[in-house]
Image (tube, rainbow, N blue to C red):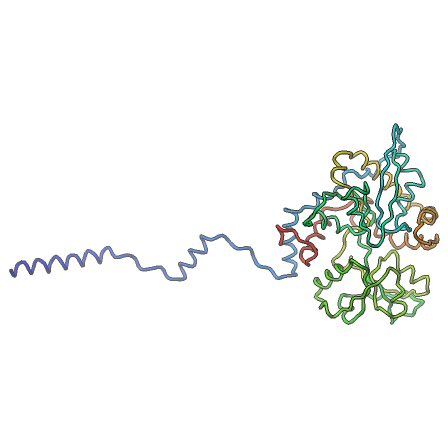
Amino acid sequence: MNRSIVSLILIALLALIVSACVAPAPAAPAAEEEQMEAEEEPMAAEEVEAGSEAEFEQILACVEENFPAESYFTNELLPAVDATWEPMECDSVDSIKVGMPWVLNDEEAPWYNAIELGYFADVCLEVELVAGGPGLDHLQTLAGGAVDIAVVAGGSTVPSLVASPTPADVVAVGTFLKHSPYIWLGLDPDTPQDQRSDKVLTPQDFVGKKVGLQPGNDYLFEFIANKHGIPHDEVELMPAGFTPDPVLVGAMDYIGAWIVNQPRLMEEQGFMNWVAFNFSDWGWDGYGDVTVVRRETLEENPDLVRRFLAAQTRGLNYLLENPDESAEIAVVYGVDAQLTKEQALRRFELQEALVLGSDDLPVSHMSADRWNMQVASMIQYDQLQVEACE
């Protein structure tokens, strides 16, 4: 009996020794577990500060990959710089309607030249210029087929339409203005009325001011306010027309305008001390008066587009080389405005730098980088939605 008890005790001790030898390893420290999990999980995208340059670069990279400018613009149908002009032998003539960016005033001088000097006729085109104006969007009439070609005042409307929930397949094929002409226009009280102002306005100068905007231009204020941190409720926005009169009588401090238009009207009334806040200097620098066609036209009849652009470009070059003669033509064709030759010449003077641009590209040519940068900026400051880049 005693021998049996001793045997049982020995067996129990042996079992304890064996279990100690095969006991599981102690759990890894919590820090080691977290490191192992981090190594197994994919790296999260680096967070960047809203409104920062880093955020802009992130958005720009996304735009270049998912919504590149080449999907809605091309320079390929513009004439070569050294192309010679030779009138065509016309077996037939194509009649087309071209929607203009504004009422028929001196803004459309290149197209007037192309009609009056026979450039459109030389390439077998009969062109009807369809006036634009308040509430008339020729990008929409182009999409709907009412015009064959549209010249749109704001180039940003092209990617906006292409990326919209109700898109249209349109392509920008040339530009008149290489920089945005949009400004906020006021008077400099520190400069005598008969002298030029050299004041440089900043976004903060509009805090506490009254700014008149034309219908549909609120988005331009929203862009500048969002980008430069201006509280929306600290600028009083007011409905305005298209003359600078409210500023001249003190009803408003500034008014939305084009640098090529309203300043000359102030000058005519003796106010040489006008001052302009150029949106192109503060982040909004898109193309202006952009020629746009439907993609189906581009694919089915590229020759028509090429001929139109050749005549349009010739009309533009004539304007640059012969402003006096172009002003005389504009006064006749600008039937929606009471123009003088002197007014037209002043416009041509104010717009020349915008036409030539600073990109070392020929007139009418556009840059994919410029398009992409504007779209990225619009996305960053809540003026455009591209799902992949939100």
